[in-house]
Length: 207
Image (cartoon, rainbow, N blue to C red):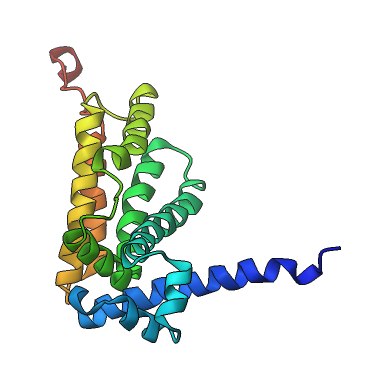
């Protein structure tokens, strides 16, 4: 018969992996990418290099986990809020705002991920085109309902993603920014860009 505690090793292993990922984020953020050896990360996590290698086959695998975890956490953060949005406009506002807000709430993890992507050729990241696909579908649904104007949904989706991804670098490099102001301005910019243009008044309507 299996003990009620039989699930604890997997929970312990998951917790140890999370500790190592968090330690990697701290080391890269505080000391820089070159200093982030597996031994240094393990020491930061309060464990040994051997234990780290038990959970991750290599430093590159740990780096991959840092990147993947950021994208997964961001997706979960967004999904919870997107479920509450009803109209295409609300969904677009929420999509942009939650993306940007997640960046401001997780600067160390975002910064560490940026350094890994810049320096490690072995790490796989979500391609912009793939990340833009759900957004393109959102825009197309707004067009189909008549709530959004006629435009190229693919180009607009890629433009929004480019601004969001660029904001991650811009925000982190300028801690003095009024982030609430920048987020509200970016949201307003794209909401204006998708609204239908009011029809020009005709001669009959002016009489």
